[in-house]
Structure formats: C-alpha cells, structure tokens
Length: 217
Image (tube, rainbow, N blue to C red; front, side, top):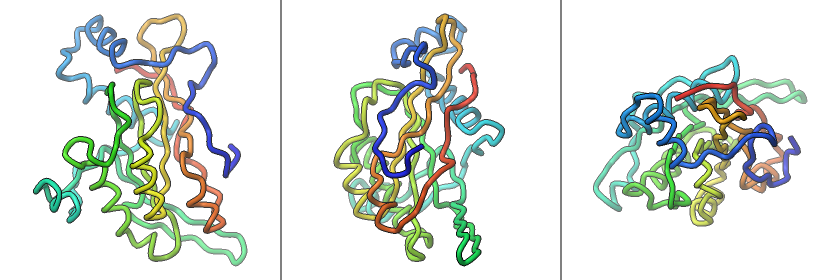
C-alpha cells in the first residue's frame, strides 16, 4: 500500500459484490439467523477475519469519555476490538507498544456516514478516548478502524476532521460477498482515509488489516 495516498474502499477481488445491509439481512435469513443478531454476527465475522492469522480479540472493557458524557450523559464507550499500537524504528533501533491505541468497530448499517454524533455520540467518544492515549503524547498516532457494510460509502467529513485534529488515523474496510453469491464474505483492505496525520510525523503505517480471510456470519 502507498503510505500517503488516500484509497477508496474496495473489495478484495474485482469479482466480488459489495455487501449491503439488505443483502446481509437476506443472508442471515437464509441461514436461520434472527435479524436481531445480525449486528453481533457481523462483528464477530469482522474481528475474526480482517487480520488473517491474527484475529482481533473481542473487547469487553469500557473507556471513559468526558466528551460523550457532556453531550448525552453517557460516560463511556466500548469499542468492538482494542489492540496496542506497535512502534518500530530502525534508526535509532526502537520498539514500543502503546496499549489500547487502536480501536476496531464493526457496523452493519445503512443510511449513515458515521458522523461524530452517531449512536448518541459514540464515534465522538471513541475519538475522545483515543486522543488521550499516551501514544499521542509520545508523538505517535492512535487509530480507529471501521469495518462496515458497503452502505457506508465513505466516512463522514466531520468524523475525519475530528480525528485529524487529534492526530488519529481513520481506516475503513468494507465487506463484500464472494462470487458466486452464496453467503461467503470477505473484508477488503483497510484503507487509510486521512494520511496527513501520518505525513506530519513521518510515519509509514501498515498492518491495520485486510484483505481478510473468507468467512460467514
């Protein structure tokens, strides 16, 4: 991947079909999955397949967000997946892990671009927490990775602006259906939306996920 080129969200293979929420619901119905469970099933699929051989652990912890609390009285957020940010330099040789600096969030949705106000300012809460991570104080870049159905054509400009103001990388991967259409799914490569945050610190980000392995909800 070219480090500083904005990339469009694409399928892993040109023969695949971008997965809409409506099609995901249809697949769930065909498999006997209640529609009330589609979001959870999609989340588990995304976390387990986005990084081949290295599944993202499901997160059960809540993180305090004063911004979200001030907006709607909800004082925390709980991202779907949380992993450390590894920082490696060759000159001088250096390695450090910043805990809880990368959030992964799966969204099987339509009719939204995931603005900061989405779901009672959940997205703003994520950015608030990541902006306070020690990685940022050390001059590194926390990140949030959205894994979505293809209805989320792009991430909201307001979300990108909020993240960029906090030096947070925004990444986006969409799910697609593998041909022939039989319910087999794959996440495309996580595309970097705001490369400028890395350009300013001369970082070359990689390894945020995708193309994923084949899977089913």
